[in-house]
Amino acid sequence: RRKIYAKGSEEWIVFGSPQSDVRLRIYNKALEKGFKGEKWVRFEYQLRNDGLDRFLNHLLHCDDLGQAFKDFVSESVRFLKKVPDKVNANAHRVETAKWWNSFVSGAGMITEFSRPGVQYNMTALTKYLSQQVGPSMATYIHAYEGDTEKLLDLAVYAGQRMNAKQKHFSEEFISGNR
Image 1 (cartoon, one colour):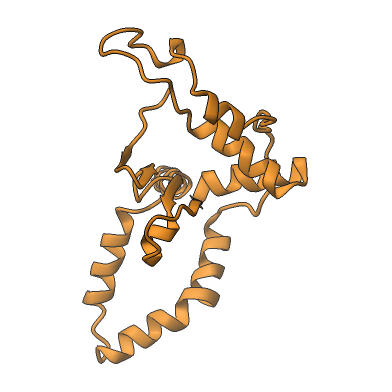
Image 2 (cartoon, helix red, strand yellow):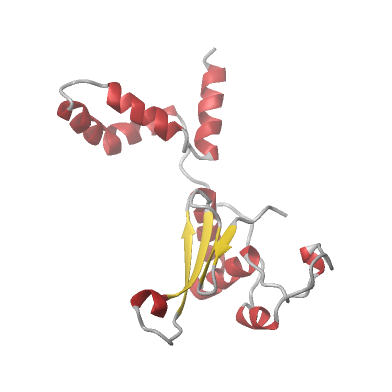
């Protein structure tokens, strides 16, 4: 299993880092809005890249948003019964909390199929840059009176946030053009 990033308090908990493809936030919305003594539990899923693709593929398969959400929550998070330190240290051996089992009852398995998408190649990338990003890049360059150095600095910084598909494509393209 993968390592889970989680932080929280008595009134909120977050699973997944801000950069994760799947991030779940559970919190007391009433407390956030200043309604003391009330409970209004809110679940928020933040999905991007492969996490979003997996969710949409599963939603297309099961055709029920509530069910798809429950399936993903059940796959992503599990609340365990409290156990003494160093007893049953392996989480898969620890019993799941009854309230959590009740909450995710009826959850199914995530479907593992993928729909074909647009092929990610240099032609598609160039078209995207030209049609979607080009006018904004031109505005930025124009605002800096033709100085492209700041734009290149932005691109280098953005390169640190490339997803797996983008990294793979750029590595394949570089190796194919040597």
